[in-house]
Length: 249
Image 1 (cartoon, rainbow, N blue to C red):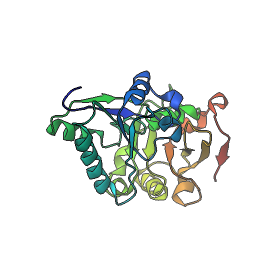
Image 2 (cartoon, rainbow, N blue to C red):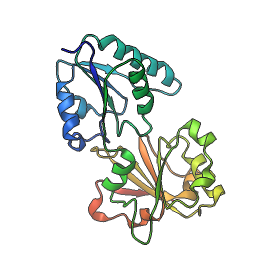
Image 3 (cartoon, rainbow, N blue to C red):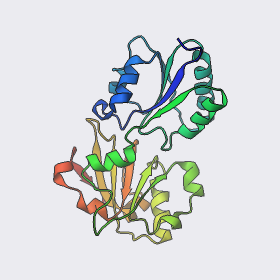
């Protein structure tokens, strides 16, 4: 056994265990310690090594820094005691998951680290709902934007006026502010929008609407959900639908 553990930053994907990479599955079945995020599904946790220590590291609003410090403390505590630690993150560990910060921390403390990419919900959710992110003649560009409180107040939304498809993560709470800001920045009010709730799970739900309706708070959506903005929403194919869409005017 090495003197200190190797730490793997593993992406759990959008929630369906079948969407894990083979490497992620193997590591979860071998890990001695698994530190997992709030959105990691129970189905994925059920396939973790039954002898592993499971440490919940969910971050509620206002507790991000405290929980992040606790994550670092747990890694330092177990590193001399085990050989394999999995830091399990929903989606991809390097997409809005503080993966870069954690890699920096591990490097600073001399711990070996490996990143295992996962499928980000930003691309998985639209695909599962039958929405193409890009489409010849319709959308040749896309951007993934954080929609939580800090980003809403600091982002220059005018920079996203001409992006064909916008994928907003963590934007449910402030969806009206985001939509209003985009309209003010020059996007058309009747631009189609789709929210994909709980993508890849049995309770997946798709809500199709417009930017104006979202800005006017006419759309009821529950987190977690990916917000898709762009003409590609009109191309949503029946074959790709995993759940019945609801229309919000």
